[in-house]
Amino acid sequence: MATAVFFHAHPDDETITTGGTMARLAAEGHRVVLVTATAGELGEVPDGLLEPGEDLATRRAKELAAACQALGVARHLCLGYGDSGMAGEPSNDAEGSFWSADLDEAARALASVVDEESAQVLTIYDENGGYGHPDHVQVHRVGVRAAGKSGVPRLYMATINRTYLLGLMSRAAEFGVEMPPDEAPDVSSLGVEEDRITTAVDVTPYLDAKRRAMEAHASQIAETSFFLSVPPEAFAAIWGTEWYVRHGTTPEPGGELETTLVAPT
Image 1 (cartoon, rainbow, N blue to C red):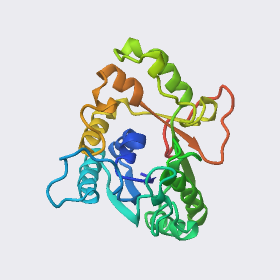
Image 2 (image 1 turned 120 degrees about the vertical axis):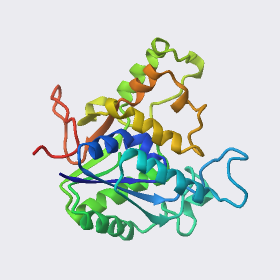
Image 3 (image 1 turned 180 degrees about the horizontal axis):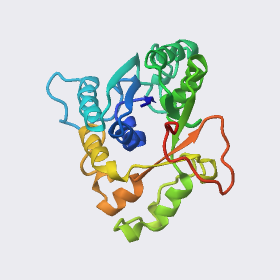
Image 4 (image 1 turned 135 degrees about the horizontal axis):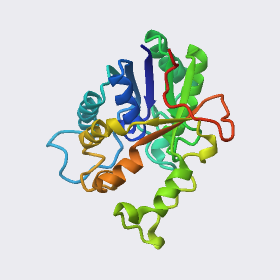
């Protein structure tokens, strides 16, 4: 059995981007380890959600623990950097923020976990962090450097299959989702084009676990959010496959995609 380390920026990122893969690997008997860079203390939170005297970092830690349980995560640890906030905000450059972290220092911290776990797999984000968030971009930079320091044999970049997403959007009505043309979101900067994808992990059997983990992150993913409010068929179409680019490889045109992150035995 293999050990896979998943490196994410904030609590809830692990569920949205790779939750199905984590649940599948755990169900298959592999060891799943989660490392988050920050506590996500600058996330938005609905008025009245926090208990008196409770801060968002504390709430998100509780939510993450529940999500980890739903996904079968064996170990979680946080590197302890500050949440950098959204792109262009002053918090990006605040002392202690992940965006302003020394790359070698952060990479050594991550590599030490990878080495301690004797991990065969490390996952990060694509070069743009999926959608450009500073902490997500930094996960990519730190993760690539940590992979070099640790020598982990398989490094994957979790991403969004932009080509597939555009296809889903064009078929939204089939899934009972209303998407007026003048309100359709611009996804041109999300993820990567399909021809870069090397790995497509079918997580359909684990969507219940992924949904439970999403629900656990109630401060960030409300029941009324698009993530949770779409019909079941749409939920399966959106989240039933998780997409990766294996770092350092180029897919052959028309070639078969990998279907798992672990090496075949």
